[in-house]
Length: 481
Image (tube, rainbow, N blue to C red; front, side, top):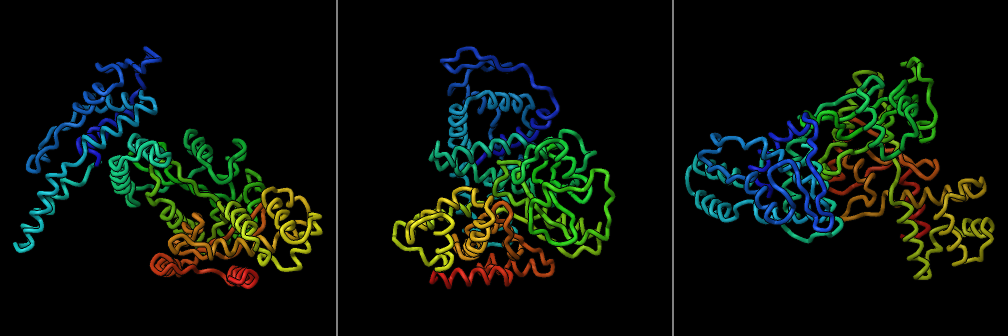
């Protein structure tokens, strides 16, 4: 686990890190040897340097009795540590994190001893039990911004790339995740509406972080925070100027089934909103901005907070829905067709009439020839430019997509990550719409979200509209599932 004193040091030092201009600290001295000299009184990046830095930053943990009286670590040590870490290359950072996780973690012997005491205390009075529990909590729980968030992002990259299989590295990641989950709990987050009058650096980051529908230019950004649009973000006092998760909303007359009408068609920038034309809120993009906060639930709470904000602004509004992309569908479908091709089956995925249409439209041979032609069509977007092919592909893809969202599971939950996110929120799939691919609406029935969420999380039951269930039934009938 991450040493408590290191976290104390980083927490106090991070304030200065944010407010001071960077020092001209690092000079490359010897490219081949990897040595770097920086303004602090330590040079190089070898083991002895790492040990020296850690020895001064990670001071011995105060005893339980003196925990509140221990002096805070020197601020200069915290800054030195962050400067040093930032100067390391990728390989040296891995070595540093490995050493930190292995040599400066929890005192396992102390934890073991306290655990034995806790078990022995079960026959004693409640006060004794509570005291031992508090000591054990102190031994296990680290204390606590941007630096630690970035640090965890690098740990996640190390783990995903398998650069290290160390269990201590994984434990360090888990410790940081738990710590950040406490720091960034919903009660400590601030909801901010982003407008064209927001600080320039915030607007730039909103544009930079947009991961669903990239913005083309400043005019595009201006429109997305202009009339009939809303943009909200969660921020945290420990990371000023950094939006943590950003949500874009379109205010419309009815639930949208086409993303083009949201990200490509706008009112004029000086238009006045007509409240009578605003009946629905469409959540069309949500982006997490900090890789280091992966697994820390923010998006779910942001949407629910925004719903309350919009209800306050538009009391008559009753329609809330997402219009979401379906990442992974094409890959899943290509894999399904490849598997069917290999096993010499799969013709039941389409009706006989649909296969005949595929053969005619692609000039392909019946059977496996038509299946190969279908795989090729799905692998490109050329079919969208042909009205004939679009009419052919739409019912086929909608049926297959409905099954992908509803029927394909991982450990009993929806395989698709976006579907899993919305279903956890208690929002059933309401329909799919053809728009340069396929998108799906997840409708927020505010009186039913808690019940739907519980059904999904506890019983793995997916709530869906009649349209989606009808498409699923068609798929099952055709494919004999």
